[in-house]
Length: 149
Image 1 (tube, rainbow, N blue to C red):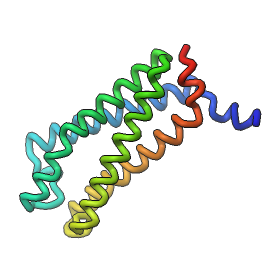
Image 2 (cartoon, helix red, strand yellow):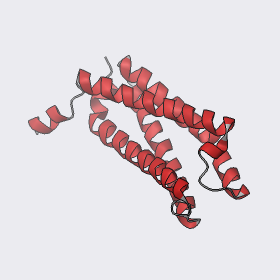
Image 3 (tube, helix red, strand yellow):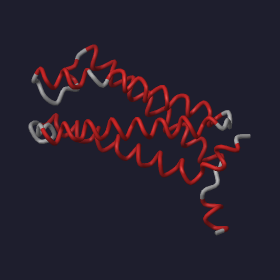
């Protein structure tokens, strides 16, 4: 048990890496939406109007996810107990978005319809891995996160 507790301890390096990953995720979301709004053909994996409508519906949810990522990074940096809330909220939002996007892409064959579909697959895999990683990092450290500074 002592080894397990030590392995889940929040080290300064782990804290910095997690903050960096959270802020990178938020920045990637901002870059994605900036590119989408400027020229959606840069990112679109499909050209059907239904696909554009589907993607446009993600904007507010992605803003929420980015806000949770930034709030989690700030709370983690400040060693506030609210970090647990924001990290779990971000992971939950990421998991929901991953599930919705995954199901749509599977149902409509988006991934393998064109070369751009592979970029969509990569975005989905990064979202899924980031979500799983955030849950896997946060939950074992919940007691330390709740304790704050």
